[in-house]
Amino acid sequence: MTSKRLDPARTALLFFDMLNGHVKKNDPATKARYAPVIAAAVRLLEAARRAGVVVMHAAADHRPDNATSAHLVTDTDNRLRPLAPRERKPVIAAGTWEAQVIDELKAQPQDYMIPKFRWSAFHQTYLDLALRNRNIDTLVIAGGSTDVGVASTAYAARDMDYNLVIVSDACTSPEEDNHRQFMKRIFPRMARVRTAAQVLGMLAG
Image (spheres, rainbow, N blue to C red):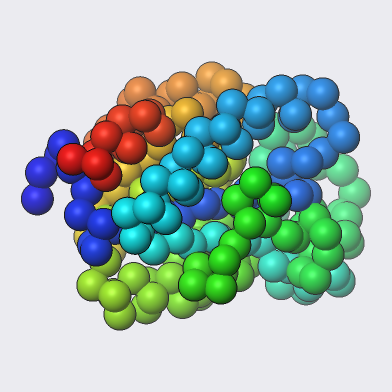
């Protein structure tokens, strides 16, 4: 194993929650934040397909009645806002336009769709089974939010002994300071943090 290259046969590219409901909001700030992330993700996807890297999409797949969502006692919501009265509608409901992968990263028949119900893409999903069945030991992660689902998945992957590459400019969070903190002070302890351009070089190398 080398830190300077990726073996396509032992690597999977995982897009986390790159879904219409998160990415395609009718909100200028969200659109501006995701524009460079989508561009970087598209470059990753194209390179992965050329190299024969397995592509996976971890996607929220909650029941419309919110019965598969977490209902925890916390101080705030994910964005540190005071909790409103309990909402019964999930952020992303299965079977809706919001739950579909964005067109720019459109899944192909050979790709893996990983329905998930919690922050981690590993929690009670078949992700680990799919990776081990193909002898994949390295996971390249892109998507959002950096400090929520990407982080939770990275922690789980690390504890399951997967090598990780976190693509810094293909991940995002509404709080830029949280994104920077994870990329600079947390993820380097468990992963290789690289830009999309660097990952392309690692695949080509």
